[in-house]
Length: 182
Image (cartoon, rainbow, N blue to C red):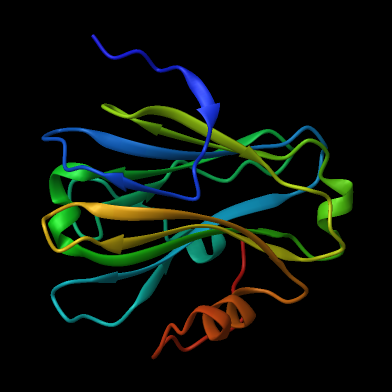
């Protein structure tokens, strides 16, 4: 039996490969602000980096490529979840989970935003997001560890822009950003 004790997330942790296990990255907030969770990802198969996000309904898949899924689009304040299939972690080169405020808002108005990471063997970690005057926030970075697992680093870094600004800051090549719609 695994004890999912809630504790502060360390700066970096290795998400060991767990057969049939998943890791969940959960963003919760208390206001009625429309916050979206998204993931830039690159697979080990050499395909172009892409994004899992509610914009244009790119929700991903747990059991097929990219092995990363977004649970949906909560537009009224509450909770969105990114799930990563750890049995397929060796297919993921890197992934960057981030959140952004839909047009017109900023993190000051979100209210009590918190990120929770749940891992089947390591338990549950969390960290709070401060309320900055920004449009987006890089939450966690996942990198292949060379042994079939993923190293995850807590970021919590805010940006005044959106996807493209995060892309350039963290060096994601070859993503062609165009306006999306819900």
